[in-house]
Length: 218
Image (cartoon, rainbow, N blue to C red; front, top):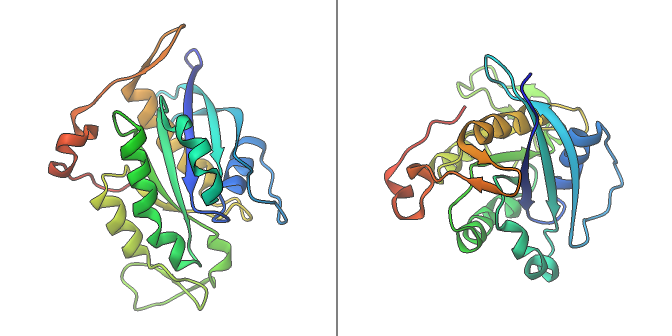
C-alpha cells in the first residue's frame, strides 16, 4: 500500500433515498433502519483500498448532504472543491429518479469542473429477489422496483457517469464496491498537495465538451 491520500467525496440525492445509510455502512459498517434525514450536512472520515492492480490506500472525507429543499441552499458551498460525487436515488421511488436531473444541474452550477460522478440505486433489498429467466438484462423484478436497470444505465451514460451500481445498505451489497470504484478513479485523476486539494481537469469532465464524450458504465 502507498501513502494515504485524502479526498472529499459528496453523497447527494433527494431526501430519504438512502444516502445516510450507504455512508454509515461504508464508513462505520453500520446500518440504522430508523435513521432520520440528515439536517444540513454531516461528514465522516474513512480509508479504503483502490481497485488498482497495485492498490493504494485512500483516505476519504465523505460528506452526506441533506436532500430536503430547505437545506439545499445551505449545502451549496460543499459542492465546491469536491473530488468526486455519488448521486443516489431510491429504486422503489420513481420521483427520486426523476429528480436526478435537478441534482445534476446543481453540480454543474456549483462546480467549476464536474467531478467524477457515480450513479447509485439504493434500497435493492426492498426489491423482490426474483430473477426473470427471459430477462436478458438480468433485472431483479418485483412490485417494489420502479426503475429498470436499463433506465439507470441509460441515465448514467447520458450524463457521463463512471458507472451505475445498485446497492443495499441493509444487506451490505455493493456499497463498498461503489465507493471503491469512485475512489479508484479519483485517486488516478487527482493531484493532492499538503496545503490544498487540486483536481486535475481531464477534458472529458469539462462542461464545454462533456456532451461530445461517451463513457462506458462498469
